[in-house]
Image 1 (cartoon, helix red, strand yellow):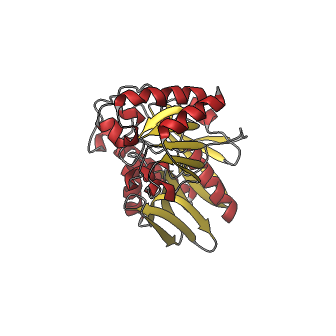
Image 2: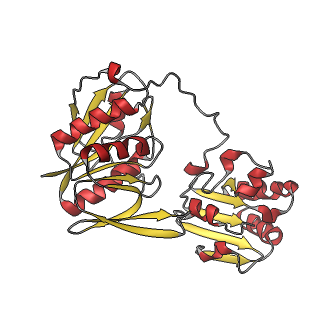
Image 3: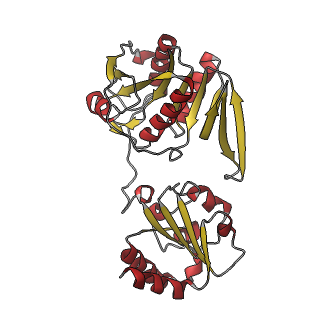
Length: 316
């Protein structure tokens, strides 16, 4: 039986929820090639993390304890050692600051291809993976033989999962901290935001089309009426009207809600890169040529100050 190795991401023992999307990407691939899913968890809180990722479709979880935060020199020898034992066809990690730190190093050490920032793939005799470049203006298909390493873009696969009966295997690896080239002396969390727009199922997002900051009152009242979370494009944050944690786009957060309602947003390419994984995009804009209409499932050409009150009334 062939194997696929998946590296789970967590921060000090707290699971990155995008790890479920990563697992689902691996499970999809395993069904195409008839492979077992092996999961590696390195660090702290291993019992709890193992329970969380014991989902249907996973065969074995390999746990390696370490009493410190993520460290490049910690992950590299553990993953390469586990890779040598399992000989996986593919190794998957998240395309995050952590995954993009160790994945290229492992690719180089093992002399195998690296396919970065993957949003979808197909497999026949070899893998054909798609990644996006130039602020999502260009899709590139990369073909590769196996073995290979893939970093998966967060949000590209569903986080839905069901509990499974998974084998837990302690993976013993002697850690020589004296050989580390650097140490993580301190880890500081970013100040918590008021909300996490990446978790919202319905987003009402506002752009410079609202004109004045005082018009945000209409946005928030409409959002309350329809049960939405308020987000925004970059110009609203740059003007100081909303905090940074509300910003959607390449320099903000990538979101994948069931419904993304864009109000007064023209649709700069940097913004479109952050919303393309939304299930349904609905746009309201006075300009019929606004770029956001190009990727919208439904569009309304009109005055948002007339449309939003009518929308709120329907839900009241």
